[in-house]
Image (cartoon, rainbow, N blue to C red):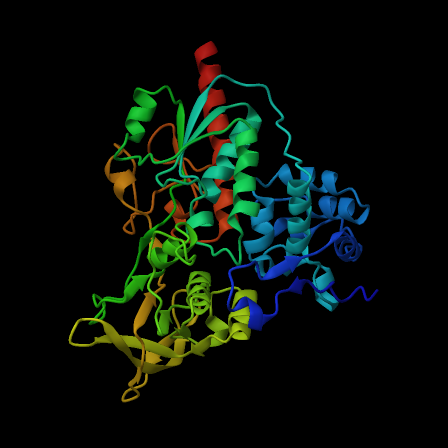
Length: 467
């Protein structure tokens, strides 16, 4: 075995997968996982753990896989992560745990994400669930939103012994995991629903079709419904647009709407009752993971797809793996290109995107070189559909219906990053509702931090009452 090279992971052939919604990456089998785990040198001062937002004992679980003790590996992961099968698939390991792996200095880093996925999938197939560790405390906590932040916070609180209820606005639990990430990256039945069932097995209750701010309010939860603390993990589902001429034309979608129709409502199926537009030639504006998801979905629905991004490939915010897969599948990247107008026909339907070529200038406040338009370089990309993937912001409904809950100018809730504490007593927040759109694992980390903060708050209240 060459210890400098990781065990290759099996994938669907690009020509086949471009026409189906089956999972692209097939993962490791037991033998492959044990072989890959054997490459780990079990560092005493493990840098990979420092790179993990939820601080999984990575050397510990990898050592168990190496020994063939897969259930023990899963339980070690579950001490820190509520959604290991999800994180093993969608976390940006290359910039987190694997990015700090010592093996990566002279060779390829350990495939930590694929090993996490293997352990979680094995546990699911063998009906192994995480262990509840504490006696019930008899205290009720409400969690708003059943995405990564909410599930993570709820799972940790349940393990601590709290009576937790999650309130979800949509008809199905999972948040961005069910409406945002496509089936070919994150299978819903086999992965997401199984992870949610594990959270419910800890004692967490989930109520769907409850819009906090409409159905009831945070103040009412605290004042009238017996909850002693509330965690806000409602995400950032409000899409952004460019504000360019023609953006109101028929055939212009936000990536959020487009992906929700496909992922949550299964519009890609022939028997779906929710329609989805299938463009002949689709332009996706943006360069993040959501843009890749939208582009690869459109491709699978039969479209020719162009991704238009105003910076170069080096600045693409999407994961390298997602860009690689998109290219393999035949998606065209129009880089250093920026839309300036969406063109439409006499009936108001999109028939093209007017763009201008860009060049990179001095770095902006984010540290990336600022794109500057090249005068006189305008050109038109023919298209009958445009998907805008420019990021999202939190829905202001919660903050506008809650007394004493402060937000910043982007409508993100102000919360302490260490413990999730907001400006309203007993209310905590984390994930995209606080930071704006970010990654699944960062949201989970925020959910864990808030769970610890809520536990400290409620324990302090109990101690004060006893005194």
